[in-house]
Length: 252
Image 1 (cartoon, rainbow, N blue to C red):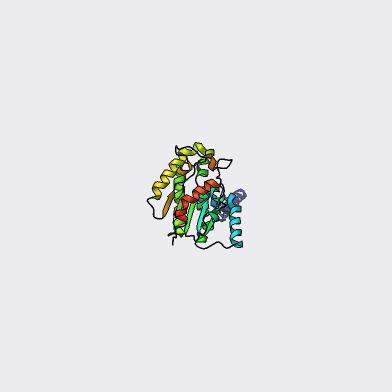
Image 2 (cartoon, helix red, strand yellow):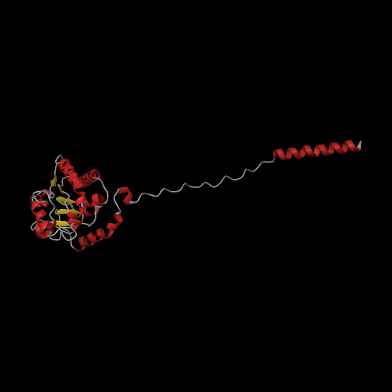
């Protein structure tokens, strides 16, 4: 009898214990802390623009800004922009005496660099005309002729965006003896730019390539400095003669 009572008590206790366990809430482990996805870095201006190492021109841009602060640039001038053939044109003011000109060439630059910095060294001056030279550095760095042509008209499109009525004068790529191996590509770029420019209003192609060759098509080293890349005053005198009808013409 006592044994049966003991068994009954044990069974009752076990049943109660199991019921208690079944009713007790089970605490779920806390969810892992949410982690924000890694931020995608914004593209740098160099990448976004497609230009090559724009940071290397920061000093040039600062120098231009300092020049403007020290001496206010003339209003509605003819703006010359591009690579070293423009930068080294130190006689520009004398060569076009009586015409307000601004020189914003920066040596070693490519077409895309002028496009990238147009908001700093083109648009703010509100020029009445833009004279542009670049392209041989581009070919020398490995750009194809097609890319240089496209880059050139991208520059013109950029100018048209903020200066829709301003004429653009494109100086053809010159035949430098030190880059004679590039002459076929230079000819290709010049021909394509000339063809496309002829279809656009107020875009003028000026051929300096042909006059810088002899009558039988040979290079003229006497027009160049010792490096056979940059021009002597004789070369700039030739350019002045070819550009005078465009630069001295009174445009709106």
